[in-house]
Amino acid sequence: TTMYNDYSINEWLFHWQSQSTTADTSPTGQRYINHRQRGSKVLLFVREFKTDMAGTAPYTFLGLADYIKHEGSRPMNITWKLHRPIPAKYLGRPKVGGGVKGEAFLFISSIAILKLFQNNIINQSAIHKS
View 1 (cartoon, rainbow, N blue to C red):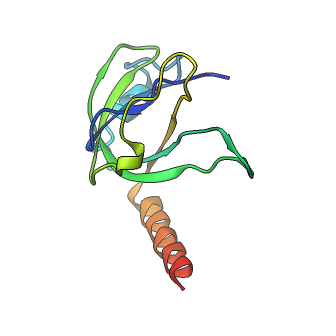
View 2: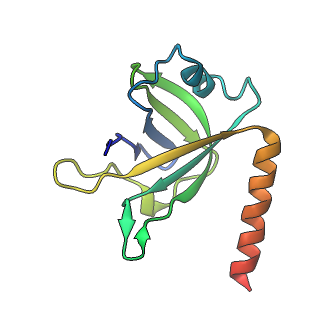
View 3: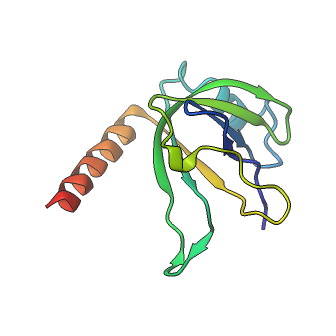
């Protein structure tokens, strides 16, 4: 299992590590760096554990994020800025050496897909509030 170095820096910034084969000059690396100019949105999801008592642990949607900077290549270490503050539950760097490692996953979408996704979140929220 590949372990990524993903963690919140503070309530607005998130450090995310790409796959080890992603170079900053590659099409994927350029998609991360230039997502705003290309009209794409970045959606950030996180989970603290791979599994829980029910099996595979779900990811939590933290929100939309924008590229700020990156360091390195293969892998890229990217700093993303969230549009809304990260909830306190997800703040702090994962423990190193014997601790649980957090995971994050990015979804980069076109505006059309994002609208569909946002509508689904709104519909799911309405269902859970009933």
